[in-house]
Length: 121
Image (tube, rainbow, N blue to C red):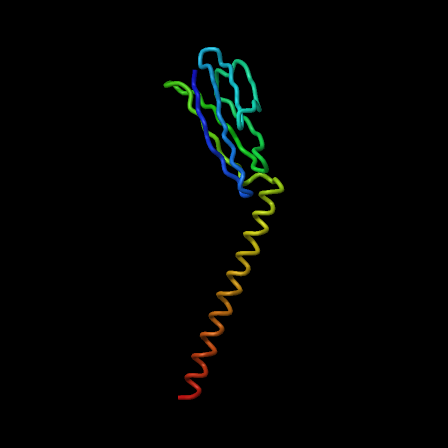
């Protein structure tokens, strides 16, 4: 039986302990978060993907069968159109605009200083 655990942190300071039990011969799968069962599936004997929320984070659990056995992965999905991801994109866009405005202002300031130095000389 395979056992794995992950610790997932979110932007709000939440901490989620995610674990799985997977019987490789029976295929029985149990996924838990903070010691509460969130998913049960039977006969998982081939590659399979699961999606679920951990707080506001949308996550994917991947179970991949290979010649050597099973491998497991848990990833946050930053591309899905969830409320959290949309607010992140809006915040990143606003930060990008602020950075661009700062750089343009800095360049204009340098050009003005250079112009006045040349005008005085």
